[in-house]
Image (cartoon, rainbow, N blue to C red; front, side, top):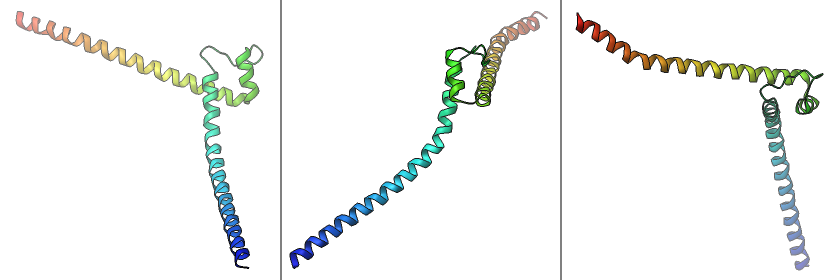
Length: 124
């Protein structure tokens, strides 16, 4: 009987271990599901931004292959919003680059103006 009791104890420990493992797996799955729910919208936005290249128009009647694929995967308003966000970002980048070039040009001209002013004052 003692052998039978020992075997039953071992089986009970094994079953408890399996139950604990199952609980851990369910907890991990729930955590992964939450993570996926957070990542999917970001991934969708990324796919839209990468898929809409410069110069691609979203007019579905004239749409090319990649535009048709994107509009099949996403609704039209989502594609339009992503396209608008890309254009806004591009405009901000162009504006920043223009300002930086202007500042660089002004800095380059300043020493020349200073030299000219010194010459004017020294000639008086």
